[in-house]
Length: 165
Ligand SMILES: [Zn+2]
Image (tube, rainbow, N blue to C red; front, side):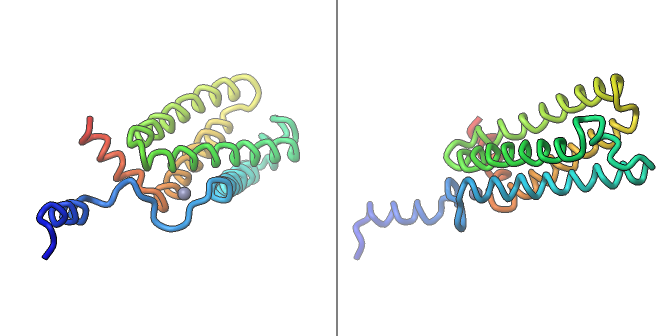
């Protein structure tokens, strides 16, 4: 027969919710690079398609340093963001407040992006920029959150952060 204390500890462990753990295999750089390339490719295709539909192929690419330069910079930036976000998602496993910081970070990123897009559309790009760049960033951010949350318990951690205050 088990010692009463040992028994209560094992019950306590069994009934505590699954948290502070990641399921499956996790590796910062492969995950971050894959996330960045996926989001980078999807938003790149979005911009190409909008430019073509608007009848101005590669218009914004050319306005922002040329097709090749802008495409490489765009992909690199997404990979850097991807690695940073996976790093944060892994950190959020032991520190729930990081999940809150990620959500606020995403909102701040969109506000900042809206601001920059307004400047760019006034200065060089025209009204198409608003649709193309800002909506593109919303698509990219939504896809990032979806892909991150699929393998990392971010929403559970948000709820825990709420409970803990
Ligand atoms: Zn991971």
